[in-house]
Each structure stands twice: as structure tokens, then as C-alpha cells.
Amino acid sequence: MKKNEYSRRKFIKQNSLAGVGAIVTPSIIFNITKDSDIPAILGGKPVRTESWPKWPRWNPETDEAQIIEVLRSGVWSRNKVVTEFEEKWAETVGAKRALAVVNGTNAIIAALVQLNIGGGDEVIVPPYTFIATIAAVLATGAMPVFVDTDPETFQIDTEKIEAKITSRTRAILPVHILGLPANMERIMQIANNHNLVVVEDACQAWLAEINYKKMGTFGDAGCFSFQNSKNLPIGEGGAIVSDNDDFIDRCYSYHNYGNPYGAMVGEVGAGTAIAGTKLRITEYQAAIGLAQLKRLESETETRNINAGYLKSQIKNIPGITPYKLYDNVTRAAYHLFPFKYNSEKFDGLPRAKFLQALNAEGVSCSKGYSTLNTMPYLNNALQSKNFQKMYPKEMLDYNLFMERNQCPVNDKLCNEEMIWLPQNVLLTEKPDMDGIAEAISKIQKNAGDIDSKI
Ligand SMILES: *Cc1c(COP(=O)(O)O)cnc(C)c1O
Image 1 (tube, rainbow, N blue to C red):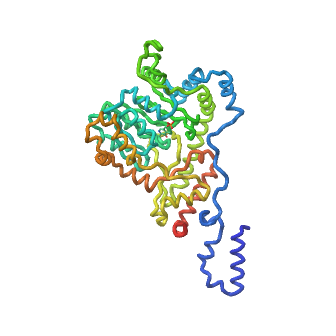
Image 2: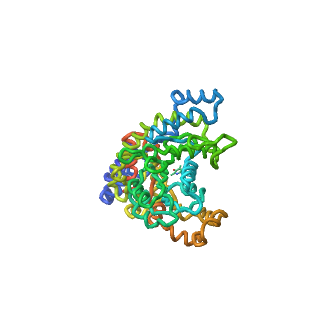
């Protein structure tokens, strides 16, 4: 028998023996019925006490042989293991070619630069993304133009893109944020109608699909990240994929000081073809990537099964609205599991306190991104020497910029509504998902009490 149950029985027995049972209201008794009814943040038992799966995963027996071989070979700079990783990655996502680069940020920069996007151009971006998306646009000298977020899918709102297209617009940079696909069919239509380039930020969308076609293969280029926290973790790393040989040859050349490669002809040293930089990954990074790639498919499957089940278990809790997928999505990557929180349905319990209470139940969670279209780095970019030379004065006025780039739906999402669970939470089993639903439900039932006591 649990401690509280015991004390309740003793309490009832003692009080009824003393003849005072009648003045004890049932609600007082029921409030202490079970330990599991009391939120952990108010001293009850947490729904979960075990830790979530460690990330990144690593198995010395199956993962280390090739890495040790690379280390002992002394061939550490780009060579055949990087090429092997590129070939496997292209095959995995169904693209003709892949180029491995140092990280996702530079994958986006390289793709934009080699698609001839730069100073004086405008690039359509979502505000609901990781800072690197916008940083990459600014690094090329192009101007980010923010299009508000769809409140159900959390992706760029395709109905609002065309209103933001000007004579300077050269590209759309959709992000499959949280690992959920953006509405690519509509984005490609708009791009074709307005003759725009499309670079997909698929840095959270490994193996996600629309109609069985993988994200990163819809646009002119798809960019991936393999940073430590990502679903395919190498520590640092990235890739550009495309079906266009000339474009990938250009990117290859660019990532190798501009030296000749494929269609980029010339002579190393004496006849360097294009202005380049250095973005090569090492052989041991590629070996880690090959080891991680072996588990990506089965882990993605597990995340999809658990996300679908968890969604079904929480969607009827008042005040909880999980993400929506576009109808043609056949698979998501679930880098994060997102849902919206409505504090009104939680007795006014603010989101920050809900997060505290859910964490106390043993469920990892966070509020996610802040509003990227309102941060000081933008003013810093507008005031930079290059921007001052490339744009007319009215485009560099910060107040005008802020006005043009308002995203009220996104503001509400970031400031009030969004809740994330991290991807490793989804690498467990059905009962673990039930535990999360139970924790949210418990907080919902006790929201007023929690709000008044913490
Ligand atoms: C991680 C990430 C990037 C940048 O990737 P890095 O490898 O960290 O440079 C870009 N966009 C999105 C959406 C990301 O999540």
C-alpha cells in the first residue's frame, strides 16, 4: 500500500471513530487519494524517474572499426571515406549527388553562393527556425525577408509568400523545421511562377518525406546538418545534395579553395577556376557518419511510430494542440515533437510554470525558439559596411525593416504557445509515451493549484 493511501485510511478511520467524519468534505479526502494524483512539482511522485536515452548513441563494437582504421592510416584529410559517405548520403535521400561540408550553416552559404545569390538580393525565409538559417543568408550579403508561420504546421505560411516577393527576390529558403516537412509542392509552384531559386534547409529533416520523396530533393539544393544534437550526429558536419552535376561540381570546387573539379576545369594552383573557400570534412568525421547512418532508418521509424501514438494520446487534453502534418507527408523526421499550449485551458497557468511542472514529472521539454525577426543581429547586419554599400537607405532603416518583417502568428507561437519535447524522448516505447500523456493530464487537472503554489 502506498504511504498516502495508508494515511488516508488511518485518517478516515480515526476521524470516523472520533465521530468527526461528517465534517471532512470528500474533496479533501480525494485530493490525497493517490500519490500519483499530486503533481511532482507540488511534492507528488514524478510520472518518470528513469533517464531518457542518451544522445548521441554509440556502440564501440559495431561503430569503431572503420574509425580506428582511418586513425591508424594517417590519411585524415578528405579522401575515400568522405567520398563513401557522400555516395551513401546521396543514395539514402535519393539525390544524384551529395557533397560533405563542415556544417549545415556553411552548406546553406555554399549552396546560395553557387546559385548566384548575394548582395542586393532578397531571400524569403521563415522566422520559425534556428538562427543559422538567417545567418547563412546574411553571410552571402543577401537580405532576409520574413514570411509568417503557419499556426498548425509551424512551417512557412505559403499563402503569405507571394505578397513578400519584390523585384529583388531571388530565392526561397524553406526550412523543414522540427523535422516536419514544409509545403514543398506549393513552394515549388510559387518559385516556378516567379523564377526563383529554392534552397531547402533540411538541417532537421533527415529522411522526412512528401509522397515518399525525401526532403532536400525538391529544390535546387538541399542542405543538411550532422551536428552533435541532430538525428544523424557526427559532432560537426553538413551536406549539400542536388541532381544537378554542374552545381555540385561548383560547390565541390568552392569547398576546396576554388580548385578545379568536374565541370570546373582548370589546373590546381596555376589555373584555379572560381573564388572558393575551405569547407572539407575529415576522414574520421566521415567514418563516424557512416556508423551513425546505419541506425538512422530504424531510429526514424521508431520516432514516427512513437510520435504518432503520443499525438493520439495528448490531442484530447484540453489546451494541448499537437503539430499538424500536411496531407501529403508520408514521413517526418521529428527532430522535435512540438505541441501548442493554451494557458487559458490550464486555469491561466503560464507556459513557463507548465514547463517547470512537466520537467518535474521527468519529461524533458522546452519552449523552443525565440522570434528571430526581432533580434539585434539584424540591425547589426543592416549597419554593416557591405550592406550599406549594397542596399538603398530605405532598406537599411531598422524600424522600416521591423515593420516589413512583422510575423504576428510566429510571435504568439514563440512567446506563448510552443512546447517541444526532444527527439531522444521518442526513442523509447509505447508505455513511455503513455507516461508523457499522463504527466500532461495530471498537470492539466491540477493547473490552478500549481499556479497558486509555485
Ligand atoms: C542545425 C541547423 C542549422 C545549422 O547547422 P550546423 O551544422 O549547426 O551549422 C541550420 N538550420 C537548421 C534549421 C538547423 O537546425
